[in-house]
Amino acid sequence: MVIAKISWKNIWRNKRRTFITTASVMFAVFFAIVMRSLQEGAFNRTLDNIIQMHVGHLQIHARGYWDDRSPESLFEYNDTIEKVIADIPHVQKIYKRLETFSFVSTGEQTRVVAFIGIEPEAEYQSLNVKHTLILGSFILGNDSAIVLSEGLARYLKVITYDTIVTKQQNAIADTVINSRFIQDSVAVISQGYRGESAAAMFRVKGIVKLLNPELNKQMVYVPLKMTQSFMSAPNVLSSLAIVVDTKNDVPQIKEILKKQLNQDEFEVMSWDEMMQEYVQLIASKRSSGTIMMLVLYALIGFGIFGTVVMLTNERRKEFAVMVSIGMRKTKLIKTVLIELFYMGIIGILAGITLSIPFLVYWFYNPIRFYGAQAEAMEHYGWEPILPVEIRLDIFMWQAITVLIFFGISLLFPINKIRKMDVVKTLRE
Image 1 (cartoon, rainbow, N blue to C red):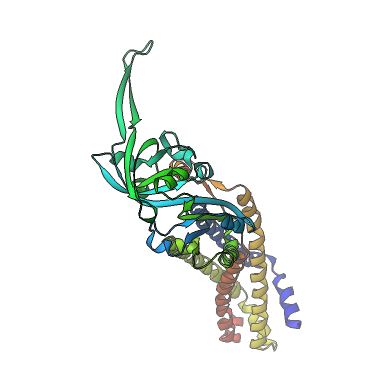
Image 2 (tube, one colour; image 1 turned 135 degrees about the horizontal axis):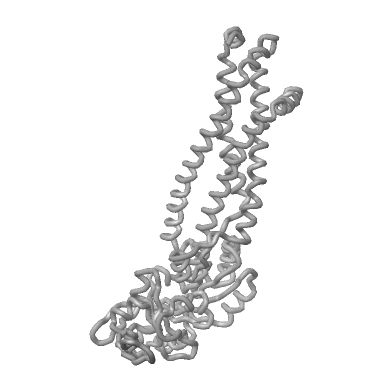
């Protein structure tokens, strides 16, 4: 206790030296916390956007559907399922879907596509129709028409081009307008429910441009009712996508659904089970982020070490005098270590305190992108912002990491005091 009090008084004997040491630790903690918060915010924002727009946090399928995606592995949506979901808290949205693979043809061209029956009004916002629709109009729930992705429409030659020449008043030359038109219909051939054959002609109502190149070549959106009629599967679904408040609610809701639904008939899958490839991609991105953090930590470590070396060398004669008047080296080492520990803790707390206002401001006013990058993000249906993630573990782990670097740097003064030649140091 006495050594702790002496150490506390010692660090304030030279306020300039204490300020330099604590400032190096403070800025190290500040930059580490801000960088990690931005990285985690970007990862989680991307993940949440994909979950909200595509798979949902949870999906209910017929048992075995996810493995083979067969038209035979469908289930009937009834009042029992609806009541089970309605009684669960933290559920935001439910998307009913009927998906199958089909041949789409215009006579000259044929391609295998993903034929997806949706409730258009429910998924209008999640599909970002406002930004992706490039031609025509989007389907409605009672329509008997379909919407194609642009790459598929081009392959099928559904989009045709024409040139219109107009005379404009006071114009020196004619005005040429290149226009695009949608051909009337395409033929769709697929397998219906329970062995039924499914073939029909569908009018193309609109074209959407998806930035994912693979999806842009094979997506067909169809009103759910018309898909059920086409597949001879009234009130039948392939999946029921559920969006909840946060990812933290997923395990609890999944367990409730598994208990309430017949496990012999249904399977409940969470987003991470359905998106294993994307989870691995996020893990690799986090690894890349970790490498960047290691570079930052290396700079932080050298900065802290340089500060400790400077502090130790400045006090060599002070240490020699203390030992010469009878203070044991072990006691001197303890005193110095406690002094540096105090400085480290002050620097860490100051770094955390400094970072909080910045993170809170960016949380409510996220960093916004402009130009081409903003347009690309908006086409995906994402707001062009870089959010921050505020979590206790981010503060804790950055503080612990910096404290470890600080602890490693303390080996220098320990070794310096232990090997110190008192007489030689006093003569210098």
